[in-house]
Length: 305
Image 1 (cartoon, rainbow, N blue to C red):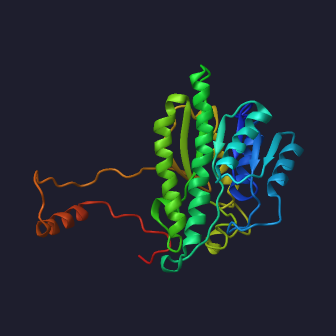
Image 2: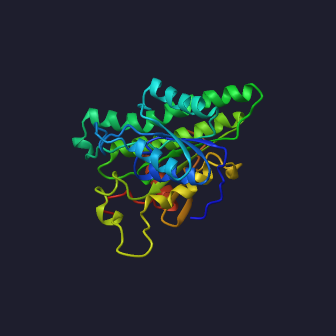
Image 3: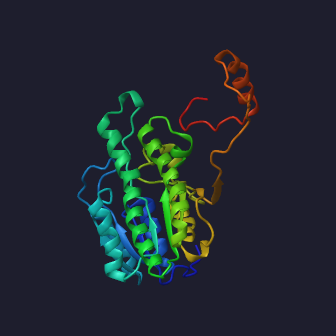
């Protein structure tokens, strides 16, 4: 990847930046000149406590390469953790330009076996863990705009193909990632007046969350281009988090290997309007006709059709 220093002078916060995609994003931002706040709790792939301190290791890597980075080890799915995350950027660097929401973990089960704790834990880290940092950052940027210092701010959220199409055995994760898309659209509409652009990426890459669930797909090749390397996703995230992405907001992108795709969300398809209330029997032919004229939905990941 060529280095253009496109983020020189920008302060970037990345959550879940200790490993996988978050680590790749933090290193890529640093290589482009950004100053980093590296957040990670150091938990295991299922969100349970771990002994490692991966955020400190990533910050050390950035500093060893001549960059600037500080560590934030708070829980960003709590109000205080999210607030302290934003304060870490402001107290250290005096500003905040980009927030990359990336933290998450998996607790996969088929729906009939999925217990309430695993539902709550996954929704909490992915969806609440996006909302709270976004809200705290947005409040800061709103204050800046009202004070006459309109920022050139960016938020990059992390969705998933599971959130766009669904994924068998990942009902909690799919629901959370679909919610992140909705949150992204609303945030883009609400925050534009304050100089904030909000987009989402749905990455496909080898991480601790995917290398076991999709082991065959995610395996590194013996040679040649490693399409599932998390570093492949980071250039798009960095571009969306930079000033170069001016005018791009409220969009969702898929990123995999060397491929970038603009995802097109729900739009009205075939329609029938009677001009009066339908009766149940009359809808059978009408609805089946509408479905026949519509595009076939993309299959759910892991489904048999």
